[in-house]
Image 1 (cartoon, helix red, strand yellow):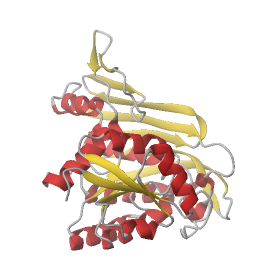
Image 2: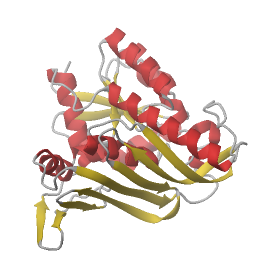
Image 3: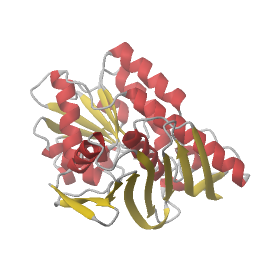
Image 4: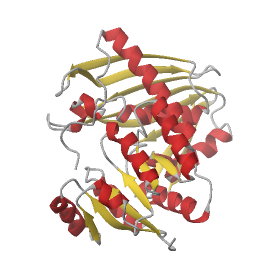
Length: 344
């Protein structure tokens, strides 16, 4: 393997406008190929981003000996298929969250990764920002005492009806999109898996039949007594915050999941008597995630979190989905066929 990890990108989802430049910026990686279902589309992306090779199918990229690892930004329901095909082709995988649509699918990916000896990482990029390193440092030092309550929100407006989030078969809806962040960060800061969940949702007709959630309000109850409250939505005003309350105070982060390359502040409050504003240096969390993954592949260093974390997150999302659908009388989601628009 070369001194740099050679990346290939499957598809041209909107997120690649942020992630391709970030992977190109990494000190230990380079983007050498991008694939689309149409070669002209792949060439358009390649020319725009200065990528040497364009492929007219995902399969063609996976057979290239010039590529060591793939980045998968495809719709949620396609993750399992293309992670397994990538591993079978001998490629390491960085995949956008959610890694898969169920804990069972995550287990299948884990078995294949173990069988091939290849690296797989679920791309929760926010976990690589210095803000969260500082946050975990403060939590470990019990800066706000015993953790009692987590409040987190992540909402935005996905836009018109052509958006893939309005297609059930592609794994659409809010819970497995923005909701994944809320569940993940709640599990991370408590260091526990929830013992119980509750959820209520708002639903609309999916473009391909069935009902999908547009927003979800949920609660997680952890064995140690802490509770997490979250709301998530893909048809709402943009909101993005994290508040962690303990017996001795609270911590607050504005825009915890946003790309913040400028310096920011982590607030530490103590009952109005003592407030500390921790200045945190800005960084591109996509760059840091890419460098971490490349270092793990090239030098064998452990990944910051493993596939058991992805399976645990999926298990909680599944439980919340069942709870919300039961409350609303919404039908079970349709099987994920991967059929639909927006898959380039």
